[in-house]
Image (cartoon, rainbow, N blue to C red; front, side, top):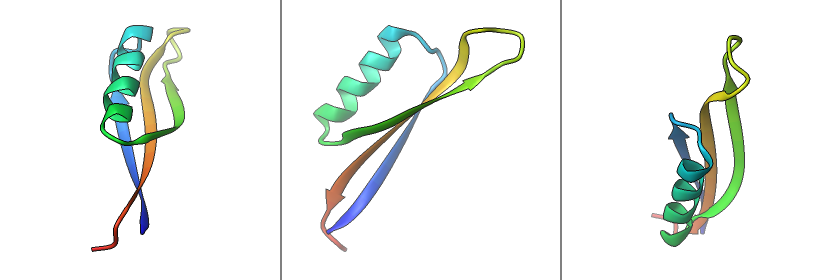
Length: 60
């Protein structure tokens, strides 16, 4: 078994979009790992978010 990673980029950072992505990928069998935000100097809101998921998959 190998640990696989999935990175999902969210361009419109709202609670609804984050929740949608989390529910979508967890339903596909991925386990949520981390969330990182990319900030702009001109705004206090994040401009992008990156969600990281993992799952065990059989070796090829």
